[in-house]
Length: 386
Image (cartoon, rainbow, N blue to C red; front, side):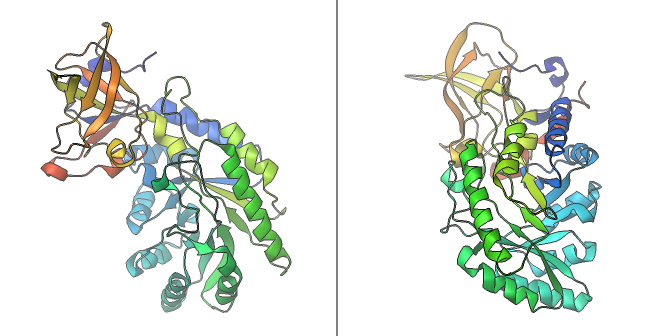
């Protein structure tokens, strides 16, 4: 089974480009809102680093989600898209003074702080503006996730967060400061996680840390468990919406929240991943000595995940219903790693056919580059190409 695309509408659109199924995105957001809404004080933020296309941000903002930013530029994109500053959290291990000042000027909801030096700078800059900065401490829980090594973030060896053994003294330091307010704890163990056991392990660690704080009569207002829920790259048509019911239920069952606490999530890939496809045309079909190549006009500059992570994306020939043949699907970049897939079964492919590289709504368009002086790909929603 292949995805359904308005191929006739693609004829006059310059390839490669990103195509976003706006109906699927809205359906996904409705499921998130419904499933999170089953539980008291579950608050979902969209991780803007997954996709910052303004049209996508507009749809997400309409759904009522907050937003998780990891740069000042993402904060600006969120504000421009209409997200209220009161729903913006600012994370990241290397916030600059300029970015911190921007966040203070907008009076965002919270900074997710990753080190004592960062805390001190936030306090200094907030003092200069006579403001109180709300902060949550990102604690590195030393929980491994069953995912690619490059996208784990919760191990002691990773650059992110404050170690568990330093949590008490960092909190003590914050309580001494006049221009920061300690409001929460933040965690994030990685991305593309499909094993709920990883999230259960995080819940157990958070419970342990909460008990330590409770012994000191400290109950924080907000617990933020990050995101990390993965998508089904192998079967985007069969499972186009992740299992949010199980995801939120896992936290409801295993995380011991106090009645006054709010639980925050920062979902990115699971929100937008399946709604986006990279649409590319076949330039040449080349018969090699041992294999057949479909050479397309998209490259690793347009979608870097296969080259960077050896990531799998399902590829479909949406122009052909001929018998299936096997191809290596490769791009035009002068790099041997510019390969989207090897030994891929496609309907017989010809020059000019459209291929859809699926599940590319997250970390696709946003990570595109201008290597080889190539232009950045444009993005279109189904609302525009009906």
